[in-house]
Image (tube, rainbow, N blue to C red; front, side):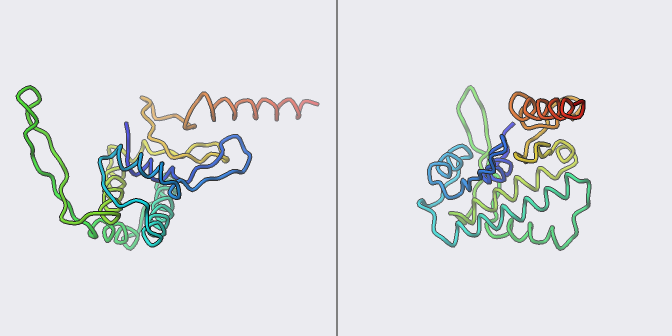
Length: 185
């Protein structure tokens, strides 16, 4: 399941192997083009400095909210107001469209606004949907302190601890094993 807000939050990439390397993917035009294309969004590229700074601020704000939600803390009304203000910058609505004889009808989101304000509003809308009871317990942050990747836990029992069992999961198991071996000596 793809989530615009999760992909956006993970644009603050960290090397999960522990090198300390970090990358702000919002600075990479190629990454932004891919994000816009994947979620059928349109905004001017290259991105202007003010819009890039606004995206970074939004990412930091949403990350802070997400970390509190994952810890089980309730969000305060003033925190939600800031999210609502972002949503209000570019209101949009659902329009029903005819696809074709075989596929029937579909929906598209339409807004009188555009550009990066609409992109930020759509990210905020995705985040707001993630906060709904059906999804909020499935939001996780990778237990690998070097990674901290945000992911949506689709496991039946919602017990996943790592963004990827083969990468972060194996790495963390090896680290724990080595720690136990050191303690035995």
